[in-house]
Length: 171
Ligand SMILES: Nc1ncnc2c1ncn2[C@@H]1O[C@H](COP(=O)(O)OP(=O)(O)OP(=O)(O)O)[C@@H](O)[C@H]1O
Ligand SMILES: O=C(O)C1=C[C@@H](O)[C@@H](O)[C@H](O)C1
Ligand SMILES: [Mg+2]
Image (cartoon, rainbow, N blue to C red; front, side, top):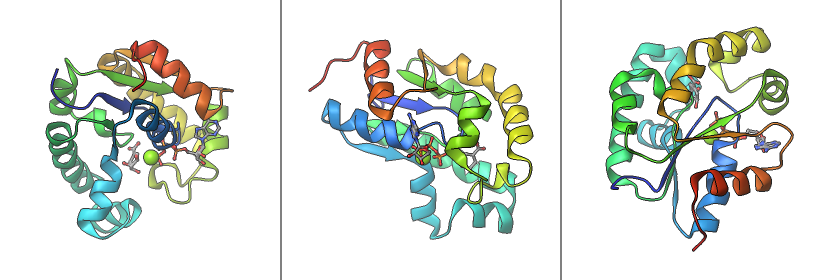
């Protein structure tokens, strides 16, 4: 299978970056994050891109960044929380090892706080998070080859559960 060893998907704040870096260490590979790629390439934060160019411009930028990373990266790749909204991206994920990190709304509120740096959760984060998940849960599930619940687990426990669910052995 070419492409990343593992692709991580899931909502904002679920722990993709934290667990992705732990997984990379445990598996002896590198970690990459498509949100970081976008920020580095554009020299501006995701929130700034949303405000100045709008969400649809961000999605077009994101689609390109995700497609490039899927082609280039062979380690652990975390996708932005909304990357799975794109049908072309979902098609590229077919045949990849994809872990969906999940959490419930209360855990989401704890992890994302008031959502200052998260434009999609800026107002009434609980309600917005529920609505986002209603629209997206089936898409995360569609692309996933493993679903790893993160509620009440430490990042190390989530990493362990992901290694088990993905049937991956350490380096
Ligand atoms: N299993 C966990 N238990 C408790 N807190 C966690 C856990 N995993 C991550 N966190 C904390 O939750 C916050 C969000 O984690 P992280 O940045 O890894 O999520 P993310 O999915 O990469 O989010 P983003 O949408 O910003 O990319 C951080 O403060 C992190 O320390
Ligand atoms: O869930 C989303 O739509 C987003 C998640 C983040 O990773 C960023 O890509 C951005 O804030 C949008
Ligand atoms: Mg992250």
